[in-house]
Image 1 (cartoon, rainbow, N blue to C red):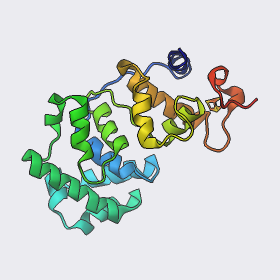
Image 2: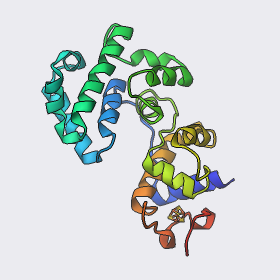
Image 3: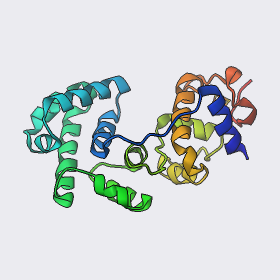
Image 4: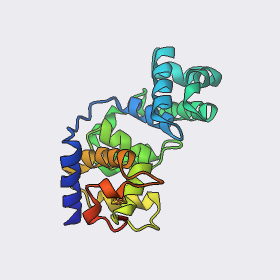
Length: 214
Ligand code: SF4
């Protein structure tokens, strides 16, 4: 089946990636919110600054919103994100009794995803990042690279929405391969299958790809 071949070729090209979902789920959630509509470098800087500026997530939740905005200003859309982060933290505190998402570990993947997607401004991709990177649940986040490369490879139809792509791709990838597939597709999108000029002539997937140009 093509998907197995794709997984195998990507592993040969980029090496095996070990899934170690050991990050704190609130950290991953907030870092993913900060990564929206900005570069990795800027969002990493904003997250580090946020962590350095406050002693706890409780302190972030109760600070004046402009203090939070100042701490994350390298991350783009910082006023909007500051307000959103406080809304999320307050909702978690209200529902969990403290700011932690550790109770989600005992839920099924679908239940945990439902909970996360009920938080303000949390969509499929953000929820799946938390599930995959901290809760050990094999949910596939579909970011811009994963979406573009999957469409070009014909794993989803070119008219499919990114929302729908989550479930369609998820259904094709064996759970144990989800983490590595996610990382490899991003790597392939960044290195070879660029948005504007895909490097089909040097692409290891060209024999399987319906979008390959020669
Ligand atoms: S053959 Fe071209 S379009 Fe297909 S995955 Fe490779 S670079 Fe992307």
